[in-house]
Image 1 (cartoon, rainbow, N blue to C red):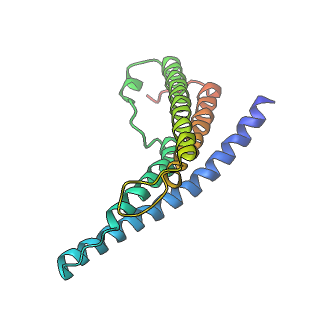
Image 2 (cartoon, rainbow, N blue to C red):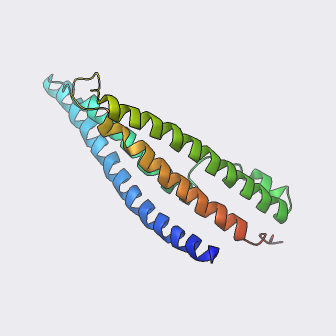
Image 3 (tube, helix red, strand yellow):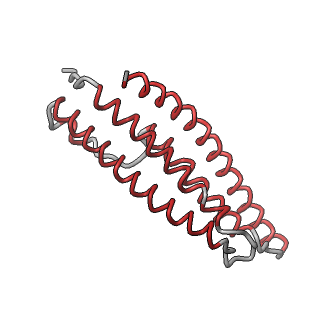
Length: 171
């Protein structure tokens, strides 16, 4: 029965990660366009914007948290795989389980801290001290959302590592 919910969670996280990665890609394009526009206006017309840097910073926060879980799913985060050639397949499986367990623990701590900060920001309802008058809560809310997806993705990967048989080496 546990395998059933893990399969379902895997499907859900993969689908969400596709959406998150698409949104993150769109944000990357938007940030590039905004910076290009600002550089063009500043250098060609001597008319710099007052909003481009602020908007780019805010969008970068969204980009980071939206790309966090998809990067974990695809192996885009930093990892040490050089040990694989030096340890037995069984030891490698145990190391992968340990690494994914630590990833889940880290993700839970990060989620807890970000959620506390975000709740505090919603209570205080402050504005960013920037040229653009924007409430902090409109930027901070993405942190817990992206981190929750990161934790769920890490749980799926931990389940996969746990249920995987030891890899066989090709000679």
